[in-house]
Image (cartoon, rainbow, N blue to C red; front, side, top):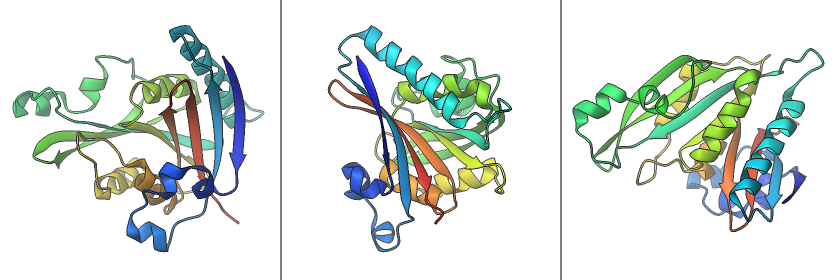
Amino acid sequence: MRYYIEKTKNAYESFWWLSDNLAPQWRKNRPPLESFSIVGDRLITYEDGLLFKTVCDELLLRHFMTDKSEANYTFWWLGIIGNESKRSEKIVHHFKYWKELEKDYDVHGFTSRIEEPIVVHEELGYIGVAEFDLNALPLAVEMMRGSSKTGCIVLKEKRENEASKEIMQIALAHEVELCSVFSFSNLIPALASRHYNTCLWKFYSTEEELCCFYRTTN
């Protein structure tokens, strides 16, 4: 296993899946984006993947931490869950998003939780948003790696105005794909247009990549 860091001033030129799948409104007026990525290569075994995840934890904590061991950013988890198991609507309404997530993760450190129902191709689902601090960042990365198509980390500089409800509004206005997965190529610019940054996980053949997209300010 090896890893390396990539930085770019124009994320649209570096990530084909981002530029090729933009909706018409973003092709005409896309917010400028730069990126910071940690790429893991030659991940052959299960242990290689776990080692790369540990590397990402350490590098991200160092990247976001200030000299006071705090972050200059506010962090949120944004996720979506569908009803692929075709459970009854009553059960889906009971578990919603956060109860479902609690089956697999200890998310007690995620605060200001909100969730809203969605319907995708007649299938009921839920979108969840919650705030977390720097201590919970490794868990959020684990969750993101385990749900790379349905979850991401959203962040914003603390000096900016921020609110979980605003992120939820952006997510609800976003067109969700079949099987209740996010179209990140359009969610990322939608969040960036409101000055929110996004981190997500990508899987390739023998590679994994943690990508962070930042709204360019100058």
